Image (cartoon, rainbow, N blue to C red; front, top):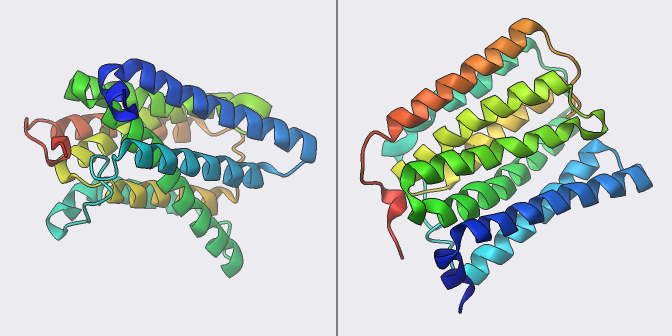
Length: 249
């Protein structure tokens, strides 16, 4: 049986295997950081490079580059779908930009593009595509949950404040629903890579890094609010039954 055939016949087992690889990468890079004191940003870069490698290898072995949306470009007619998430990402800049040094900005831009490619390859390219045969809404919800859950791992080592990690997971779940809906409506994963990179880039230059300390109640409420907005928006986009992103090769 081919790898693609196995994924089609056993979608949940296949997704469990991918998630196991994700958890192992996070744990392994965390241990390396403790031993060699690389720093959290270096750990993130290593972690995302490994995710990108997993995505490239599996998408190639499965021959899913087309099915995952990498062979479909960004069409002008689809750009309005990305206006709301892009606007929300840019809203965070209103909190003030801490990083302005050109080299640091370029480094953050490169890192967030890597993150966008790596995580979209894993969560929307592999996990979501694997789950699609089980039902569209089920695939959207389950893949969004698995996208949100790993954010809780940032509590380990004190990288994120626990309250923020929980709230951010709610926001990530909503973003996952919106991203999956855009993926289905456009048939392309590239808008998601760009939006993902934009969200992370804005966060990095506002926070000055990936460590997040205690947040105000107002900030936490705003994150939950936008998470709900993304859930509603994503489900609104899913109101139609036939999607470009469901076309088989």
